[in-house]
Length: 419
Ligand code: AMP
Image 1 (cartoon, rainbow, N blue to C red):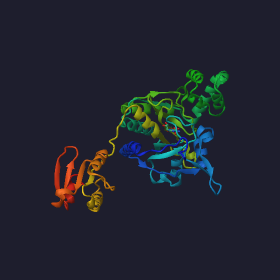
Image 2: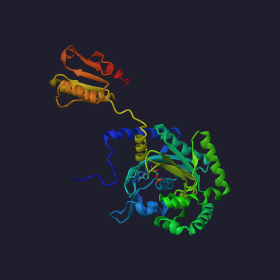
Image 3: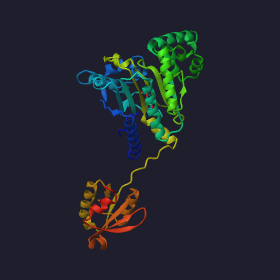
Image 4: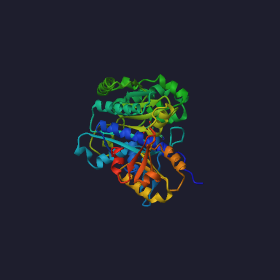
């Protein structure tokens, strides 16, 4: 038997209800903040991610799905969205059309990570990219949006962590200080952290090894080495979050390993999803657009993982989206009226009334069972004495009330649904 690829999963109809609920909520909240949706291709030239995300990152170094197409071009399934959005922003000169571009997306992503609970190889993210503002209020805005979406889903066990990693020169100073601090502790670090010491020292903060964590707890903190502007911007972010009533904590170890981040970084974690606790993460990336060949454009964004958010919702018994019910179930009492019943079902559907009908000539009892299974609001009977009188009998499944409606009076049926 052929099975789905490890790390991918089918989203079956019962789950799709949750996905569409979440996606609609995401769209609603982004629209509320005047963001416009952007969609980019599933694959891009490998170069884009190598340059945009950074060669030393785990994503580029070990996780990308990269392949050559028949013409020998190296392509990669997108592992994240920021680089793609920035590519589109530059390619279509979006910055010339509008000084501030507030964009959002919902899209599958691909990373060859070790699958575990909350970690997949094809997963889905929604997120935002705000291009063209250096205001720290824009940083606060994206954090507020991310938080509002999670809270609107009914999640409670959330922690918003924020930090500032400053401009590159401040960060370089800090890296030197950190290198000095770690120099004589190197033998005690894990092998992975030793490699990070050489290649991407800030990422040692991401180590999950107990001893590494202990060592990093006493490390100098980046906030003590920030430049004036980053410090005052960080202050504005904190004040804006306070004024919006968003609870947060400053976490100086939140450095995020990506080269293109500047100033604000943030993450929202859940206490209910085990070790893969980050539901979303983001920050400011003022250097990336220039790095990818565009004119200097300050930007900030975030990405949130849908699978993990749904897992958190499940574990917190958060939302129970109203699962689908139908408007009408047509019960065919006399088998020879099946064509008439079919014609009626088409008419109702044309009027946007959600209608189901049985095609397999089952007994009235079996059809009623189906109607209940689909949580039909009304059952319409075709046949019997009413039909001979030129009427349908319609039963309200909630109240049990029945009424007769003339066969050709579709408009009064539609009126029951305001359609
Ligand atoms: P990142 O782009 O790595 O900052 O990730 C942003 C969010 O995407 C994370 O907080 C997760 O919720 C989600 N995410 C990242 N990688 C995966 C993965 N392999 N499987 C499921 N969700 C993921």
